[in-house]
Image (tube, rainbow, N blue to C red; front, side, top):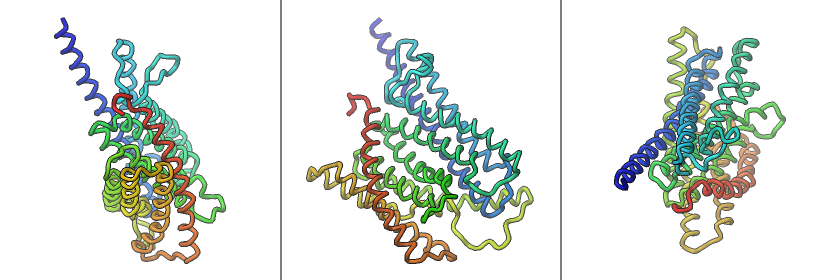
Length: 374
């Protein structure tokens, strides 16, 4: 009986581990598809223009969100069934279990967050359908339905990071954090388009890039606590940027030719919109952050102060790099010295705030890890 119980326990643990990895990577795949779909959709608006609810780029957006949502729902149901059977899933499967609807469901925190984001996306998708039905096509990102959709996608991506963070001490969880953080670095600034109509001295999307990039880099580097983590995140972001740089215009132009729509008149050679806005020089900041963390480990420096410095350095590198990469990649770009200085100066307070919050958010994510693995 003892041998049978042991074999059954091993099989149950194996099934749980397989389900944990399958659920996490499926949610991640959904966020990748969504990111590619959005980059395609933005490029479509730039190069073609006319847009309706039913386009292939929109289909990619909804497919990615649906994939993440279904995977989240399945994992919640599995966790609920395991809880009722008296063999609750370990916290490495999505994080701390949360009782939902008075205990009707048991939802791992990561999947609860990603599932809420995906469900919200589908609900706001109906709002977007109504918007298109009333106003026809639109060519801007800051409509109410679009901003709501972007916020929902961002929540799903945060859930993906939480899922991997709960298993960060396992190989698949470690690489999942490295893969999911660049996705959110790419996407997190986009909801800032909601502030586009305010009389701000700097584009709100640029402010979002300067703030969220150091915040997420600091979180990734300090959460994983392994040399090379910050560099790996920067390299993955670079690979993603290179892929979207090729994919976005190719997809927009190929689809336009397939449906018989011409490209806009007077298009000039410009970098693709979404990948062109991704921080190209993050690898420089990542190497500097690696050096600061190395000194912290060797000399016992105050970790909180080092994180503030890491955030500030990254914010400054990103802020200086954004106008520089625009000048290098866009032959039509014109940036005055005043604009350059203003953006660079913003990197200091935004990076400092990012370093401060990065340490706090890392502490919150660390709480997801079981005590015995810390």
